[in-house]
Image 1 (spheres, rainbow, N blue to C red):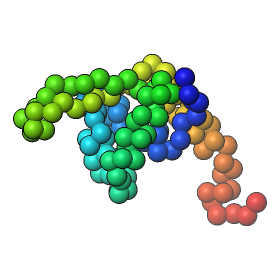
Image 2 (cartoon, one colour; image 1 turned 45 degrees about the vertical axis):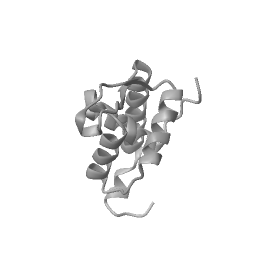
Image 3 (cartoon, rainbow, N blue to C red; image 1 turned 90 degrees about the vertical axis):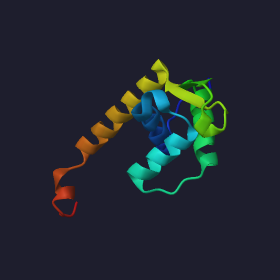
Length: 112
């Protein structure tokens, strides 16, 4: 398995695979991230992140059935692995710990 660090964009992609659950494929993932974040993405950046996440063992992909809307072509669907779910949990816990460690004075506008 490749390195297990989870970058910020990779985290967004992994979260979006979870959000889309059984309909997580490249274009749908890109559209969902754009809708939720306001970021403008390219499909190639999403595909690269999906491939990295699969190499790290965080995602599994398989070919879904062909549809008329896609001109009879199959689409590659993605699901989170248990390792991917654990990576998201750890990222969330780390972020929460760091947020909680910020002194209250920072939010109140005081100088440290």
